[in-house]
Length: 536
Image 1: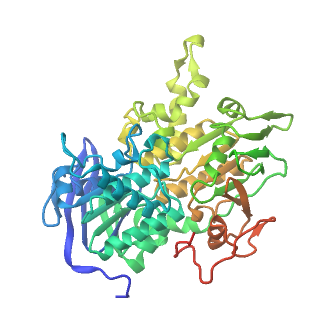
Image 2: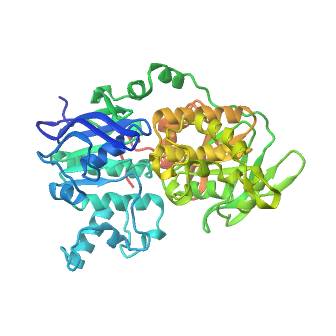
Image 3: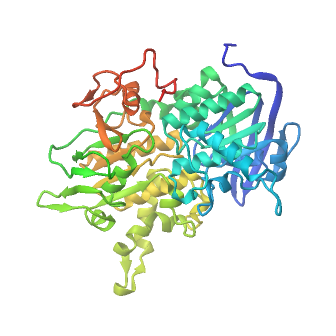
């Protein structure tokens, strides 16, 4: 075995055999098997609703299996407290933080007794600041209320909370979903350090490019059953997709073409806009038939830009105009964006997407209730008119669910995200703004999303697609714009270079793939952004 990929195969830390877990009529796990070892990074992969998160919760004592055997370090945990005592830490798919509490309080949630602390306040601060500096690459005031922080920093807090327990088994359930490339590389550096000390690390993720770089082995689930375990050299997108969805689905992915502009007439134009008080001016035009990719390192202004286009937040200065072929109308808030058929999908489904107390049906169709109502001023919901719309949109994105009247929280995180995307399509927009929409959805679901976006654009509609995963753009986007320091720093057209896009995100010159007069820093000799974290 090659140096750098050593696995301590002598000791199996986790053994799962024929584990079954049901929730009423829903079979979440139908006989899952898995074995992992000391010093191993083990990926758990599968489609949305395949049982990945359920398996992670069974391992960490959150859920008790109906049948089967679970052995963690020779024992079985029946509660999270028992799991913690065994040295198991789980970072859950949902970003579980208390917004009203400080960073410090969130980091040590559950670590103290009811009437006494296990560690002094000064020691807590010292340990927290040291770890956060290592993970974030900058100082964060631990007294800051977590509610004031962006999603990516909240995710770091949940990860740091687990690392502070010095676990023997670490489970990362979609823990990099809210992180950009640079942040993910820092996480992986920490994972490699823990692996070298003999820790067993489980990574549940849909980002196959990440698995190729970090995983020693991968177990693939389909409909709650283990369908294969891949060695490091077998972990590829094609092989995983084949196990999840069959060979034909994989062939379809490789034959897709990028969307093509239908007209040089702009449908949306951004003039002399600023998204930051101290940022430069942004000028941007969107045309019929385009799918424009938007990317950048976390916090470079691209998310603010997408929110401004959708009217979710306001520009600091400048204008966003819509053109309908007759006149020009300005978009300055959510109401005017909706009026001009601009729809928005957020990747932060918990904070900005789902209504947790409403059903799947209601979550998907609530924006069009009024347009489909009966009874004049009574606004009675016309379910007979809405039902075919629900079935059509849910089927297009293959939402896996039981009854449509179940709460949306009964769905896996990925299927919740599909409902939000289907909701946007149901509004029949002319312009679709997607703010990291594929966060937490599997490869097969991404292919369904890409297919729907291509169909949408082929009808002369327009898409702005923000993502930190450059692989998502390669066979999809008409062009890609890169943000740095609150402005568009580079623009790319096909054929795309993944390395070129990543270098632009880091402000490094790669080749002449970009167009326009853009300043880039020089590339360090031998720098490979896919493999090596940059030096700041």
